[in-house]
Image (cartoon, rainbow, N blue to C red):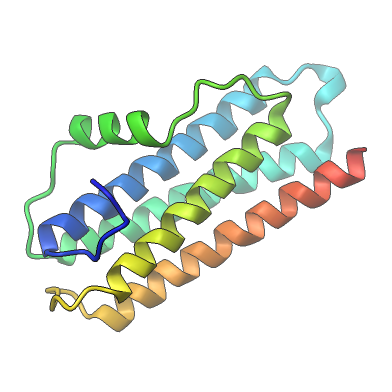
Length: 161
């Protein structure tokens, strides 16, 4: 499924929103994993706060996306199908040099996904079963929070240099 074309139906929009939900789950899971793997020397309060905030924000984003999917006139796709799409397109096998680089990649990936999704919806001339202005306002809000996450990680990385 590509975001290089306008969204053509409620079903396609539901799948794309479900992809966002899985992306958020990946970010949340990786933040928890990073926290659990930090040794005592790495337990910097700023890093811990950043990881906790990323996990909480991702859970909240997932809930907001799920609420949108529930309003659409479309049958949801099995979680396993969406998870496979996300793994193939968005997950990285790259071993990043540290927690902050990985977190930056996660935040940037989510930001780019929402940016592309918003563009694909804006370019669509389909009437969705959900009010488009509210849909876009929700997605823009999430995108802005992802942008802020990128900035927070970048600032922390610069402070650690």
